[in-house]
Length: 208
Image 1 (cartoon, rainbow, N blue to C red):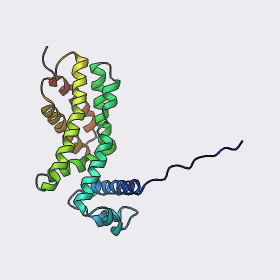
Image 2 (image 1 turned 120 degrees about the vertical axis):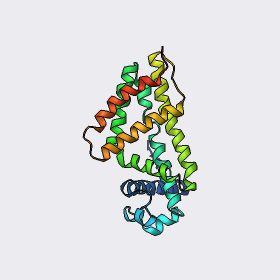
Image 3 (image 1 turned 180 degrees about the horizontal axis):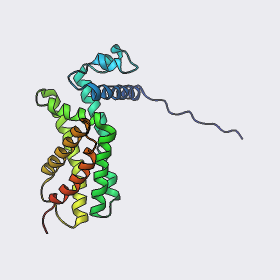
Image 4 (image 1 turned 30 degrees about the vertical axis):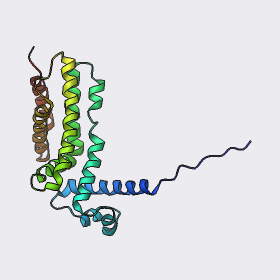
């Protein structure tokens, strides 16, 4: 009896196109995280990748299109970052510990990407084409944090004391402050972040 093995399915031109755009997005994110929005160009992205400037320009009309695609690509990977914390925690205190540890871990491992996000959010105040994409991404991050706050409230047997937008604003401000301290060389920034999260989260719950 003979047996045959089927060849892996061939990717369509559209799949190949998307794969190449994703490769370029990863190169762009590396460049953006290092030099920031203002100093990034298609030529700079090409310089930091295996592709020529012409190839980059073929897939993206301009810097803005590349940056928006790249940031959406990155955020699509990370919006479920805390879902494991939500799913695995069985006590309010356990969730606090896991959430604080995850916040510190993502600053430690992905500081350039977070720096880029805050850079782009600020740039959106000046550049209208950025605003819609930034608003959409910001809402996905708000929803991500709200899942954590809602689960914490459920485990604590209390209701949230505020809506998702202000809760996100408070935690995002704390995260940004800790990120800046970490990037500035503070050896205690992440440890302090953990303590601040433990102190702050109970304040997001309604009183008994």
